[in-house]
Image 1: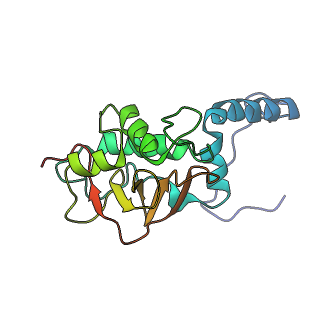
Image 2 (image 1 turned 180 degrees about the vertical axis):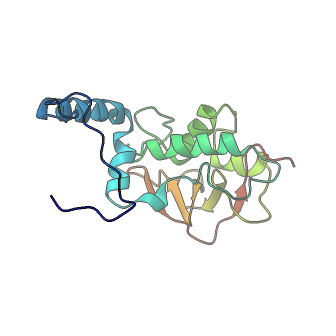
Length: 193
């Protein structure tokens, strides 16, 4: 053995239990961990698939720093957005308000209802009865558009990052898309008049 330089007298203490190694994860333990994680993620599979597919921009900005809707209820708006996003892929059906299909105002009505707030059921009623947005749009705000459909109105919900969720029409499932301009009005459930 080589002599150590002066002052280097530290020696590693002997192992407390000779012949015993530290714990290692075997194949069964890894399988158990993966199974538990899959079971925990199952109720959120659609969101997880969206994250994996790179659709993070479509998720609501809940809990991120930033302004809360003025006069509105940011927590309720977040719950409404989460509900609406969870309906992606469900079919459009005129007059439907869930849980298996939606029309445009049925989706926004059901989302705000799930967040604990009652709003008018139709797009025209939402435009007429809810407080108008006069400043920057926030997640949960509703955009009402002119349309050729039977009600002459269409409504979509802002989800953040220039995106909205909507039930557009027959043959088009509930989807997230970029916000289109030319809306008739923007309203914010829960805001003061």
